[in-house]
Amino acid sequence: MVAISASYVSPKLCWPVSFMGLAFIIVYPLNIIWLFYYAISKQKNILWPTVSLLLGLSTFLLHYNITDSRNTYTTPPFKVLSFNVRLFDLYNWSNNLETRTEIFKFIKSQKADILCFQEYYTENKGTFNNTQLIKKEMQTPFCHTYYTTHTMNNTRHWGMAIFSKYPIVNSGWVDIGVTTSNACMYADVLIDNDTLRVYNAHLESIRFKKQDYTYVDDIRKNVEQNNYSGILPILKRLKTAFIKRATETEIIKQHKANCKLPLIFCGDFNDTPASYTYKQIAGTLKDAFKDGNAGFGTTYNGVFPAFRIDYILYSPHIAVSQFTTHKIKLSDHCPLTATIHLKP
Image (cartoon, rainbow, N blue to C red; front, side, top):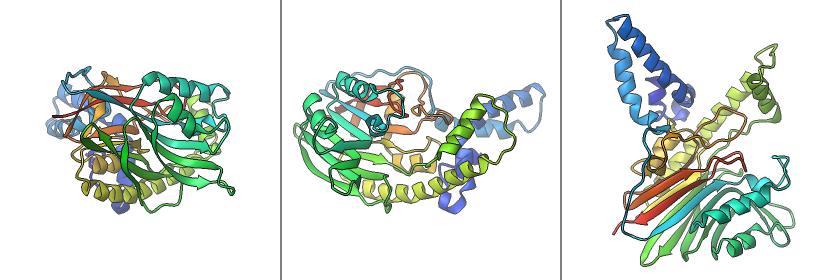
């Protein structure tokens, strides 16, 4: 029950609940085992785990899709891609100099009409002028970029970007009150005679340090640990991120509520479907994950336990006929694509 409540309780009010929300995907199956145990042993208080399972079912189904979903619509489709590209492997985290080339090959192969990138990087000229390359190679001449960091000479830029084959008639960013690399931007795209708002968000990162990754990697490799001192810094970083994301989320929720256009919301939320972040931003929006393949929707490729933290959400004015989480390791996040139709 506590894990279920994490979607509704702000971490600013009670941050420990958020940890249970993070553990939801583990706690919920354990509750199923608990229910079977109570049933077999004929315990009288079987009602409690039964109610917990029923209340948590909808949240569980946001982690795991039971059936494949393919829908058919008569209106012309367009394709959206959302991808945390991890700066196109600028610092060679992958230890593979071909990663940037492979990222571009993948993006081009998807033939998407609207592209949303988190952890975007570009330079004003030369080989790493990613903005001009994407415009040309992906045939997306319309672009809105929002940079959170520049070099002193203003020739290298870190931030986020939205590219489109359709005209961008309005654009801006949401002031989420931070000065870090996290941000939320939007672009209003004209598709035929309809205007659609596209949000692109990268919410507060946990900001793990090298020693945190090493500690967890050692645990995964069964390296003997002499103490548990490495856990405390990890928990502190998680707590800080939960609280910061709550503030960002509430600002974005209000901005989204003032939007009168049909919208698509893409982004790296750095939080799971059982979180306050997801619940507040999603609201009445639909989750494109439910229009995709059966199975877990894991999008995180990193050292820490795999979670679904990247999303494409959409308003009821829109329909999705296909959704895919691409299980490729070109970044520490999986790219997402959705085939979208505007309802007549």
